[in-house]
Image 1 (cartoon, rainbow, N blue to C red):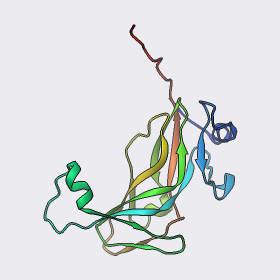
Image 2 (image 1 turned 90 degrees about the vertical axis):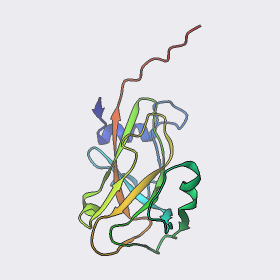
Image 3 (image 1 turned 180 degrees about the horizontal axis):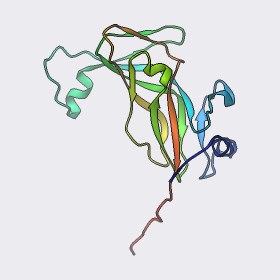
Length: 170
């Protein structure tokens, strides 16, 4: 496994969308300015899930997951207040399509981490993933924090993997 460098990321972004080795990240609002030496900067989207339970506990089953969260839309130019020691779910502004031979990982941008925000997602994004990434956004500070949709929030690190051939027993 090896981390994809900027040149390889650019090459795969230019491939036709139907090619199995193509990478799609859209919209890329600042073009190649969001490409670092070994990552792609991602922005915060406009949709959030907020906790709204007054219960002293949470049972993570399929029925309670929807009843203890409220979905909100925060337009670009507006902000969401995240109280101290609270966590919300957000999404990336960008839609991602990973190729068959590339996996990904999300890391909090250091400029965001310095504001005591921790961004977490599923630890591993599998090859062939398609969609906007869900982000757990935790305010670990003692004061409320403002989240602005469209702000750079995370880095996508891409790793080339060697896919195993699909075994078909006949």
